[in-house]
Image 1 (spheres, one colour):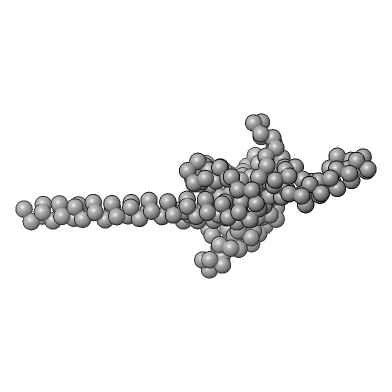
Image 2: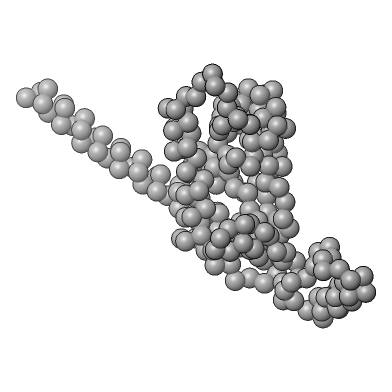
Amino acid sequence: MIEAIDKLVEQQQYMYDNKIHTVENRIVNISQPYIRPIVRGKSKSPTEFGAKLDLSVENGLGRIEKISFDAYNESEVLIPAIENYYKRNGHYPERVLADKIYRNRANLDYCREHGIRLAGPALGRSGKNAVIDKRTEYIDSVDRIEVERKFGLSKHSHGLGLIMTKREDTTRSSIVLSVISMNLDSLLRLSLFQKLILIFSRYNCCYILCESVG
């Protein structure tokens, strides 16, 4: 904390001497000097403090693609996330469902080059003769809700919205543990669901067999 206070005094003195109001890596919290303000533009909270997290969902499980306490452009995470998918599975995905911010020219060109359909509207204004597949758009929008649901589930049920740690390393660990807990819960539910299907399918087979024998 003493080191953080010394750094804070140094930054304030620098801004005062140079008559400016910003400085690189400005400390806004003495107990958590690694925290940076992140401007989100939301009406409720235009500026947020804490970790910025990119999460992908594959086969119902959440995967952390990037954690940072600094503001960054989310679109830069898309290509590394797809490459990580390729390393795990040995092939590229058929489609990627992401927010509009990920749909820049670099990401679109990359997905086109690798035969990946990046869901969402085309850049710029749509032409008069543009063909829009409403059914595909609807399916993509419904499927993309899964990642939003994972964020909500991890925040409200697995502690991601109640991070109480102070150090940077323990904060990162708490975030990772929250996602692991969410994935374990999903696997447990899936295992229970599969067992229920197996049990009821046995009863169903028995019923059909009894009907055929009778």
